[in-house]
Image (cartoon, rainbow, N blue to C red; front, side):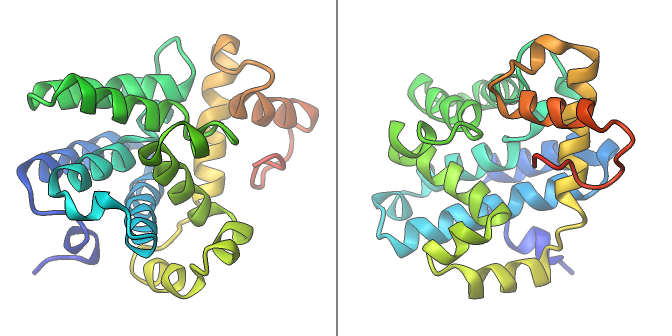
Length: 213
């Protein structure tokens, strides 16, 4: 019997393998990051359908959107904690996976851009339609303002009833800060990681969700 998680994963071999990789990659950090990544795909796909994006009629591009979303926080895990910003580490990891599946350079670049820029407001929304969907999928999961803007509240409630949040804000914020404390170059001052790090350093005894999340 399948689970709500598995029911929402596209059936193509590419997506099934990406989901298996994500399940393994996020295992050390618990279920929250995997749940969040799958929700981001569902919200991005929902928005593409709502806006009648050409992407929804192209199964290959939907598969690429899934891989991009399910891998977008790989850089926040120990497995892919390199010397670059976590977004770049995650983007590089996704491209390595896609290359192993004989994905074209054009599509690899799409995925890389979507992941590398997913925390870059004002750029991700405008650089290309694919990256915009990834960025807005993230924002629908995290921001009430975005859910209101796109009338996504009913769908959001349906999704989280099946794929719970599990304190994702704390889990992700703590993971990004932990990396930055070890390698300050991973958190440039104006980056999202840099803002989270500064908030942590201002009140290091705070044990709740990072105040800058």
